[in-house]
Amino acid sequence: RKLLTHVALVSSLTLLLGACSADQKEPEKRLVLATQAQSAGAQAQVFAGEIRAREQVNLSFRVPGKVAQRYVDDGARVKAGQVLARLDDQDLNLQDQASEASVKALKADLDLADSELRRYRGLVEKQLVSKSLYDSKQAQAQAARARYQQAVAQARVNTNQTGYAVIRAPGPGVISQRFIEAGQVVSAGQPVFAFAADGARDVAINVAEQHLPGLRIGQPVSVELWTQEGQRYAGKIREIAASADAMTRTYAVRVALDDAAAVTQLGQSARVYMAQNGAANLSVPLSALSDDDGRPVVWVIDAKEGRIHKREVSTHKYGAQRVEISDGLSQNEWIVQAGVHLLREGEPVRAVDAENRPVRLGAKAAAKP
Image (cartoon, rainbow, N blue to C red; front, side, top):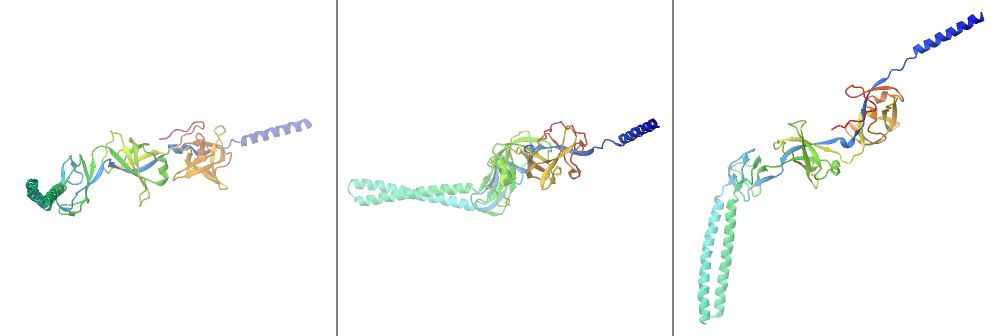
């Protein structure tokens, strides 16, 4: 009886242990979206810009007057020396004629004064006239010569002003903008045309103050035209404004588009990509960051165990979509990107990337353009 009782007890324990083993299943792993930290320096800053001519100037008349004729319009291609507009030069021609007449009159006075001076020189040598009278004639001749030289100079000025009534193209290029119409009265120096010379092109951008320390003359950048999306052209920073714009508080920067293959039009929109130099921090998506008693933390996936662990990090700068991490995380570590508020310490997980592909936890971070 004792033997039967012992056998029954052993059988019961065996069945009980078997049932418990059958009920203990391996816990299901949570599916998480994983990512790796990226170098903050590899994140390119993007600035919107506009294609402009490297040499661009406003053309104007150097004398005031009424616009008699306008020969070109916006977008017109012009050659060097081509007449673009002309003022009504009737008054200028009259002034030129008056100055020429004055030159002739004063030249006659000068000739008369020189002739009299020669005669009085002979008389004073023969002591027929006094020395003081001769000195007077000599002074009159010198004054006549000075008046004549003054008239000649004024005549040249009037001749030049007559020529200033015409605007000519300083070289081959394009009239990018027109500011006047025929019949309009303009002042000296008032812009009449905006002239863009043929040749090199720049991209004009405006940069905020916080980005200025990372820029330098000659810094290489890449330029993408909005009409040629995906095609990058080489360029470099050519000019940085010394002071900020009074209204926008931004600094004007000119980027030289050195790639000869780039076909551009004036005023065309473009994007300028600049790498953030000297940034040793890493960046992670904002959704990967959570809070633990007021301290920022991320969930790091253990590559060997496949479990997640909470880790405190130091943040540097917050952006619209990413945050820079200055300490507590290495670039090759995988972290959970989304749903961090649902995770538990030590929980096993299955990691997939943004394209729903299983990730290799030991893989290094791929460099992104």
